[in-house]
Image (cartoon, rainbow, N blue to C red; front, side, top):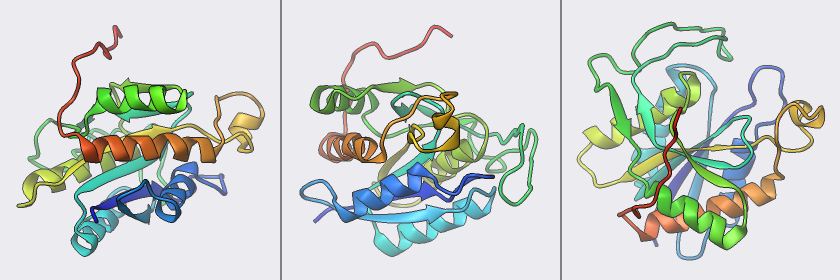
Length: 216
């Protein structure tokens, strides 16, 4: 049975809950048919957050690795590109705040996701009616740090693994959503959409040619 590794983050700052980790656990407990999902939690800390997935990849030997992160978006955002820069407006959970530093010294400027992004988005919309999009930026905080570090690991090891990053919304009970400052989605619905992402990514290694870009 194909093995899939899914990562989610610990709670950040004052939050006591992170939907990315809750969703990863739901995927492990109730995976899509025909696959075995292992969920691992990442610290929201520069550097440390790259050690955990590296060890988990070596331990579980997955065909597919998908990292999840929280963002104030109104649907499932499948990220296109990770860039080799840490530039942080706020500190991480350990108080680190790197500015204009590379994720990997002497690494490429960027890595593209190796997920079939547009196909995943289309299937989520078709099968669940949830909002989904291709995102053109994962930011320059810990999410992008993990995304770039993951893609660098997959690109430099002698395996044919594929991987990428997906941003998911807040849940309705989180403070930022409860005061209506950000969109929200119940984590069970998010997990339902993510199951489609995993199934589609595992079944297809080529994408579809449909518009999913941005003008700004």
